[in-house]
Amino acid sequence: MRESPLFSSEDLNLVFANMEKILAFHRLFFAALVPPDLMGPAYLAQCFNEHADSFEIYTEYCINFPASVKHLAQLTTAQPEWFAARQADIGHSLQLGTYLLKPIQRILKYHLLLEKLLDNCDCDALGYQWVSEAYESMRNIAQKINEVQNQKERKIRLEELELRLQELPLSLTLGEFGELLLDDLFRLTGAKGERNLFLFANGLLIVKRKEDGTFLFKNYIAHSNLMLSEVIPENPLHFSVIAFDNPKALTVIEAKSMEQKRAWTSRLKTMMLKNFGVSIPEHVQQLVMQLGEVHQGVAHDSSPRRFRPPFFHTTTAPDYLQRRRAKSPVRDAFVKNSVRNILSPTS
Image (cartoon, rainbow, N blue to C red; front, side):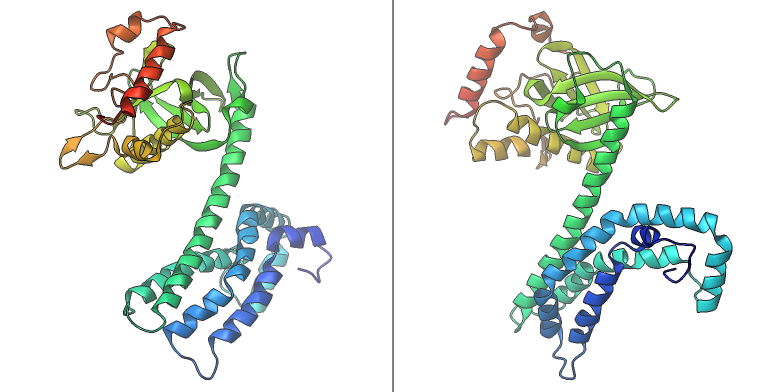
C-alpha cells in the first residue's frame, strides 16, 4: 500500500496505527526467546518480565483498531480490484482485516498461556516466582487494554446519549452526572418494553429508547439520594431502587442474569458509599458490600435498616416514606442517626 499512489500516508497511519513499532519490538523479543541455551519456564518467564514495559505499545494499537477496520473497509470498497490483486500476488488466503486482528489476539492470550505454565509448575521449584510475576504482569496489561477499550466505548456511548436524549429536566445536565461507569438494557416492573440504564459516578439515569433511536428521559436518582434493595425472594433476578425525596417512585429492575445483577448492585453500593456524605470506616463499607449476598442459604439485603430505610421484600414504597414530605428536615436527622447506629459497637 505504501508504494501505491492510491493510498496516502494518512490512510496507512489509520489502517496500521503503530504496527511497525510492534513488529520492531517482537523481532527483539522473539530473538530473546530462542537462545541456544534455552532453560525452560523460568527463562521464558524472565523474558516476559524484562520486556513487560514494552508490551504497553499494544494499548495504542488496540484503541485504534475499530477505526483501523472501519477505514480499511472504506478503502476496500473504493479499491476492490487492487486489494484482490494484491492478495492473489502474495498468496494469502486471509484478507488484510484478519491479519490486523492478530496482534490483539496475541496480547490477550499471553497471560492465559502463562497461567497454564504456572499451573504446571511446582510452587517450590526454582523460577516459580518468575513465572508468577510474568503471569501477573501480562494479565495486568490485558486488563488495562480491556479497560481502556471500555472507557473509549463508554465515551462514544455518552456522546450518543448527549445527542439523542430528549426531555431532560432543565434542572439537570449530563455534565453533572460524572463519568459513565455502566450501561445496559433492563426490564422494569410495570413498564412496557426494556429501559436503558446508565450508571454514572454521581447517579443512576433511566431512559426509554424510542423507535427513531432517540432516548426519552424517565428518571434520575443521585447516589446521595438513592436507596437500594438487592433481595426480592420470589424474584432472584430483581432488585429495586428508590429516591429519598420521591418515595412513591419505587423502581423494580429485572436483570438478565445473576452476573448482571451482581455487577450492577455491587457498583451501585460502591457509588452510594462514596456519595453518602459521611466518612464511613473501612470495615463498615466491607459489611455493606457483603449485604445482599447469599451466605449459608440466608439472603441479606444491601440496604440495612440502619443504613437505609427497610423497604425490601415489597414492590411498593412503605407507608411511612409515602407520608413523608420530600424536603422534610426529618431526613437529615434520620441520616445522622443511621450513621450513628451503624457505626455503634453493638451494630
